[in-house]
Amino acid sequence: MTQMNRQILLASRPEGAASVDNFRLVETPLAPLQEGQVRVRNHYLSLDPYMRGRMNESKSYAAPQPLGEVMIGGTVGEVVESRNPKYKAGDKVVAMFGWQEFGTSDGSGMQLVDTTHVPLSAYLGPVGMPGVTAWYGLNRIIAPKAGETVVVSAASGAVGSVVGQLARRAGCRAVGIAGGADKCRYVVETLGFDACVDYKAGNLYQDLKAATPDGVDGYFENVGGEVLDATLARMNAFGRIALCGMIAGYDGNPQPLKYPGLLLTQRLLVQGFIVSEHMDVWPQALKELGALVAQKQLAYRETVAEGLGNAPSAFLGMLKGQNFGKQLVKLV
Image (cartoon, rainbow, N blue to C red; front, side):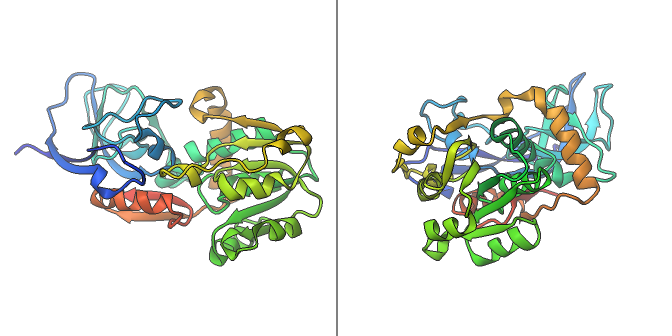
């Protein structure tokens, strides 16, 4: 009997906010493996904000997600069949197989991982792309010095949570911005930030001012909109901003900058970056992050949706901040 592979395709491009109607679940027969190929049963699928941008047809740093094809996405899983000498059944791998239960590859674009001390799912979070994103933006752009103040938006998320912990390890005052009292409590009590501002409390600028009495030297931006406006107003002269994401404007809701003049008057460095363009740092970053997770010196949290069919709703919820920590879909 032919084995089937369940996949989620991009069925249409969003007009305004994305919806579950933009996706389609299909079943496709798995073809027999050819010489040199590997088949992987994906265990977890990563859901990330960048995917929303790929759903559009507009010009960006990467080509749009093609219609009628499997949605892009990072995966971790187990080799179940191999006709490639570099891989054997039982090997655990990280890949970009996207929103589907099985992935088939000639071995390129796959990386073996060791789950002895690092859980498999962590390779999609703190020891994966989000962790390296945090590491690069903090170390290469903000370049923190002991005693400085570093602010992180979306501080309880997959990227922001790592940024703040690394900033603290560098001797900085780490201040998070997150949505809701529970997330802020987690940021301070579990992640070890010095303070966290709840942007949903309705007093963002004043609360941020109280949490940053000496101003802000480095800012890791994941959100944009009013969060960026408030933090810009607290930046010290010659501050550095690592522009990682602006999720507030991703879902058909552009967020213009209110105070662009501050970029000049405070002589700020603002650097946008795409972590996949800096592959040279990945080995160093992953080695450091993997050691911290293995030694339980880097805390992280996951929100896990069960089953491929729930990926679209989990993705849309993540865009609205409904997740807590890294958003994953468990496929096995």
